[in-house]
Amino acid sequence: MRASILARTVTTAVLVLASGIAAAAGQTVPGERWQHKMSMQMGGMNMAMPGTEVCAPVGQAAQELAKPDKNCKLSNMRQSGNRFTADVKCTGKDAMEGTMDMTTGPDHMTGKMSIHSADGDMTMVTESRKLGACQAMDTGAMVAQAEAQVQKGKQMQAQAEAQMCSSDAFKLKSDPDKIGQAAMMFVGAKAPCAGKPLPAEFCGAVQSRAGFSSLSQMEQAMPGAVGGSLEACRLGSGKAAVDALRAKLVASAEADGDGDYLITNAPARARELAKSQCVIKGEMWGGKQSKWDTFCDSNFASSARGGR
Image (spheres, rainbow, N blue to C red):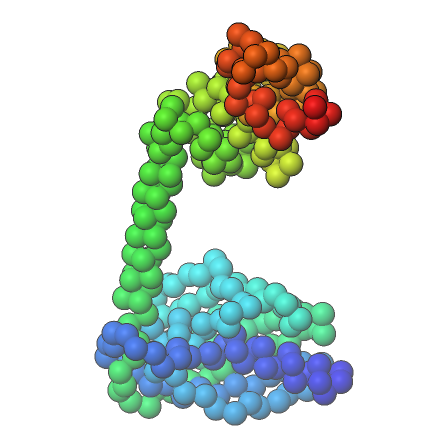
C-alpha cells in the first residue's frame, strides 16, 4: 500500500478515535485527563501512533475519546457497565465504516476499532491511562443549550410564518394591486403559504380590473399567476376561465370609460374606440361621450387616430 494512502487512512482513524473537544467559552465541569496511545494493524504492518491527551467529564472518557470528526458519525451507541460500543461511518474522500469497542476502568481503558475502507481493512487498538483531574467542557449543557436555541428558532419561524400567512396580512379590497404579492405567497405548490387559507379579500381582488391587471403583469415572472389564482378561488381553471374573466373585465371597463385599463389589457379594442369615440364634435370628444375625454386626450388615442 502506498505511504500516502496509509497516512490518509491513519489520520482519519486518529480523528475518529481521539478527537478532543476544542477549547471554547462555555460551562465547565470536573473532569479527568486521560492519555492514550494507539497502534494500527493493516496489511500485515503494525504501526505505533503518537500519544494523545483528552480532558473528559468524569465518567465519560470513552464517549469523549470516541467523538468523531465532522465527516464521521457514530450510531447504534450502547453503554453497558464499563463497556461502550458504537458503529462508525465516515463520508468524503476518506470514506470508511466500522465498529468500536471500548472498556473503561477507574484508571485504565482499552479500545479496539475495526474499519473497512476502499484502501483495505485495518484495526486500531488504543490503551489509555488517567493522568489526573482537569476542568472539562460540559458537553451535556452545551447540547441542551443548542437544542433550546433550535427550538426557539423553530418557534420564531412558526410565529413569523403565521403572521406572514395570516388571512388579514393583505388589505386587497383597498389596494388590489397587492394581489400579485399575495399570489406569490399563497398560489402554487411551492408558495410559502401554500395550503393556508387565502386572504379574505383575495378572490374578490382577482375579479377586479386592478387585481387582474396586476396578476397579468406577473405572468412573465410567475407563469400561471392568473389561472392559478382563479383555480385557488374555485372560479374555474385553464385558459377558458382566464379568457372569460378577461372579456368580462374589458366589457366593464368599456362601460365605465376606463381607457387606461383598455390600453393595457385590450389594446386592439382601445384603438377601435379611439377611432370611433375620439371625434371632435363642438368642444367635446364624441359629443355626448364625455366619459372618454381623458382617454381621448391620451397619446395612445392620438396615435391610434393617425395623429388627426
